[in-house]
Length: 303
Image (cartoon, rainbow, N blue to C red):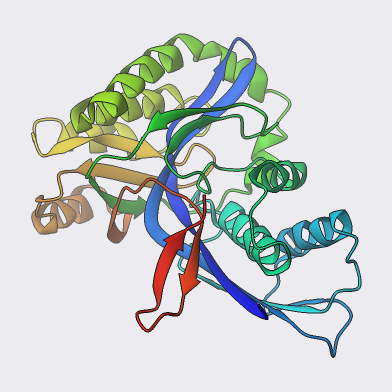
């Protein structure tokens, strides 16, 4: 095996994020936009070469090769991503985890998910998009993960508020622990509803939980359009709720897969001009996939 191509999805922020009893956690909101990473062995070089500026991905790959005792292994890494940086799309986590998985497959032909998590969170707080399924995940330590279930069929209309958020800087805020504690009661309520919603594949409950978590986060990283957006969409039965990037600028409207969004997008453009419509995507279960060139160029789940 001389080269491997792996993809990991990004996210529309999180379904929930906060802390309970001092333990940080999030439940990622994986979507069908991806970071695709191709890794090739190259004996003509003695180091890693990446096709774009990606210092965190470079650091992760170097740590992995050091773990394998292969620090002078020549590899070319090509990252091709659908994801926006500094918006809350888990772009960095997707790049890092896809790169680590590709190198693991190239060298060992299997993925050590514990090692992948350990390296990823050593560099930055990480999303749970590399899990196959929806998980409660401690994005700081990487040690705690609880499987909740598969994602139900649901579409998400992606919007973005102006600006960028450095998630690494956001998570280093010394006041964050106190701010998270102040919303703990609401986060507990949202998590209880979310667990039931995923267990019963009830999109209305999942949307309700995400909306509670979004509003609870307003005193930490406020979204200017959030309250008005919830008010506009509240009475439509095909709209389940609103979720956000808790350390980014994304807002997602969670809708039925049959929902026709054109009129809503036009209404929001008029009433909330600061919101930029990105595209309509699907909620998925996440996971690491490898490109299988068997004539169909399909993707196979690895975890």
